[in-house]
Image 1 (cartoon, rainbow, N blue to C red):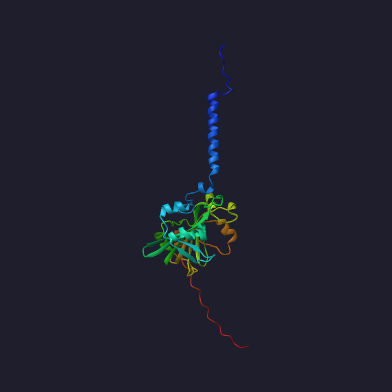
Image 2 (cartoon, rainbow, N blue to C red):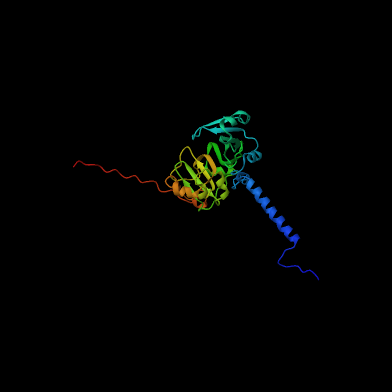
Amino acid sequence: MARTRNPSCPSLPLLGRFALRSLTLCALGFVWCLLSPGQLLAAAIFEDGYLGLSQAELRAKLGQPQAVRDRKAALRVFNYYSFSDWEKFYKKLVAPQNGEDVYTYKRDGVDIRYSFGYITDLSDTSDAPPLYVNLVDIEFSPAVPIERIASLVPEFRPPVEPTAPAFRSNIWVLVFKGQPSPAARFIVRERAKDKLDWTLAFQLFTLQGLPEFLTLKAPIDRLEISAQSIQLVKQRQRLTHEPILNPFSQEFSRQTPPPPPTKKIPLPKYAE
């Protein structure tokens, strides 16, 4: 009698293929779990091309830094070391994550200094956890007007839409660009970072103070590229961050300055 095959019971070769596929998926999942978040995110997060890079990737891209610096407390006062001295001695004394790689350039008569701040991968418990870029600090000497920054810093491509979120104070201008990235949480130190969205941000600082009527002629000493939260600005920093029209939009350039305040003629005071 001919033996019939039960259509509801898969053949042994088919069972073998299912088993092989299951084993493959399990192996991939195991490898994924072994990889730390830093290894998975070792790439630029935003279009600036720097935030999120590992230190090794940054140095492969820009070469060996001309110097390394570390910050004294929260002040903008730094100790500068040669790269060789940092690697041989100060790296162990100061701690690797406290050192900022420094690169200097001369562009159109302006001295430009890039400094890259790092954050460690907290999930890596090895003796030398990898470092990842979380801040790009760009300084100008002498100060340059806002309208010149894009030609001096190739990584600075500000938004042109008038609705792009922008804020100001008396010493800085903050502009957001693009959509938030979940991957950016990896390079943020904020305690509640998982509850917020993080977006590419350009913050322009001036030591001389910004005029009340802001124009693109205002001098800028320093530009920071980082990941910041629009929600955080609106919720917690509304007293220090005044919303403004995007300074890099055409609508902003068409604004007319307010009329100068009129001086009132003082009235004489007569004795009663």
